[in-house]
Amino acid sequence: MSAHVDPSARVGEGTVLGLNAVVMEDVEIGPNCRIGHNVVIHRGSKIGRDVRIDDNTVVGKLPMRAAFSTLKSPPKLDPAVIGDNCMLGTHVVIYAGCVLGTKILVADQASIREDVKVGDCTIVGRGVAIENHTSIGSYVKLETGCYITAHSVIEDGCFIAPMAVTTNDNFMGRTEERFKHTKGPHVKLGGRVGANATLMPGLVVGEDGIVAAGSVATKDVPSYKIVLGAPAKVWRDTAEEQLLKNQPHWKDIQEKRKK
Image (cartoon, rainbow, N blue to C red; front, side, top):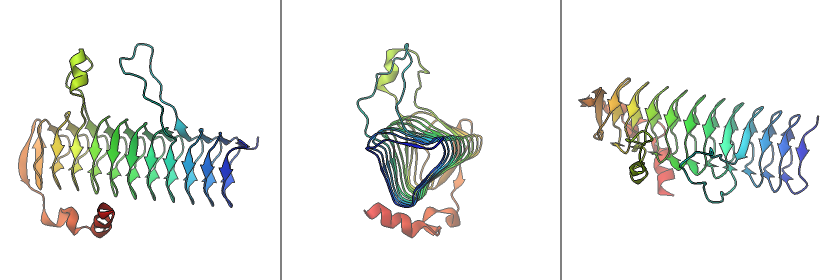
């Protein structure tokens, strides 16, 4: 079957739509995009120019709430926005209210929830889950299978390794008290988190701080320090050559932070 494009949608010159693609009301798609087979782009979503969206991906999905959920339904969400030169893999789900900058790669099977902003030139790896009310900076790498909990902040130039886990609820779903304290971690400029590490709710990883692989960080991580163990303790300084200011993309990050 051919693609379905609502009459109110606007599709840019040179854009190609795959079989069974569905473009809903008031969608805007820029020029020279490649939209794969069975892609669904929901009402009002805005897609920039030179964007690639692979097969079976959904953009602009509305969130759901279980009948027994204690969470309130969110207010009306703005449409999803996908910036220029982004690439979305297959089976990716981008929710309404999500804003992606430019030159972002979202790999296969990743999910980005509502009210999330992702900065330019960031990589969201295969199977990554980014929960709602979260901010992800520019030049960030979120590697395969890591979990970014709701109400988290990941600043520019950070690295989150495969299967790393962030948390935001010290009450683990029990008692109303938890709603007063729900807060994910804040990983500051250039912070890094190793494979299979766990960050407890609300803690801060300082600039160029590192949580070593397999560690459980229960307290704030000082800037320019490596913490190791469970619970994690300061081990040594971050090596000078490893600091973000000594990396090739540091000047680009500085320019973006000035804007």
